Length: 335
Image (cartoon, rainbow, N blue to C red; front, top):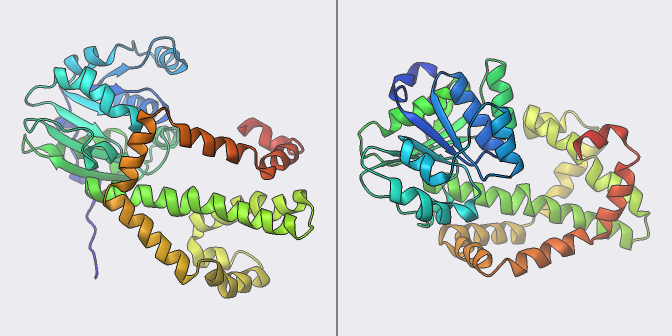
């Protein structure tokens, strides 16, 4: 089935839909900082909410903002962008944002988790939109300063005003997303594909593949340090090539030996059984099983999360990796 995606650019967006409105950025983390600074530099009226006494609070002050409590920001603002972490958004919304919502206000998200899984249920009298930059906040800011932009996703969950998409595109323009291109999606599509990518490829899939490769070599009698170089350290070279050139370009950027090994052995690792498990994980996401599990995990104080994290921290690859990274002076600035 061929799907035609809709992409919006600068000529499709107008900042007038945000001019005269006050925008509250709730959470001054990496994404919050990037978006707040860009919107302000686009001439828009931006206020910031962050917890007093935190590093992010101090950073906001250094950047020229006067951070205020969430409830105060929600009361003052016409447009409220929630950029706290997923697992605290519902609590922040219920306690501080919901009591200050009234007809005509706009709720903005950069990830659809809490709308998709009904942890946040906004009143029908407000617009609910998403602008999701496909890059971290620091990159959003850097591209803005260079007169460029990071591609974004746009979605409308509720259009009470009749102008929800125009407001969303104006927001995207305010962070220069429309300079690069803004792709239309839905809250469901963004959330489900984002969770799937994290679990099956970007985080879960990659880390398990690295550890399995490392364990296989070490158990076969190879030095852990050599195994680390071959299955983890060189991964960045490959991912950089894939990001810059695509999979086909990467294959032409490595040796013919490596390319043939990729083509002939890769399908034995990602086998039909693995693909079947991927479909099972996607089904769990779509049906809400993962969301229910993650919400319960947070409510119970994260016992499983903490145990699994500690187990990963204690894997031999972490000890070996730290020793080897200490030998690499160019790595020290990123740790």
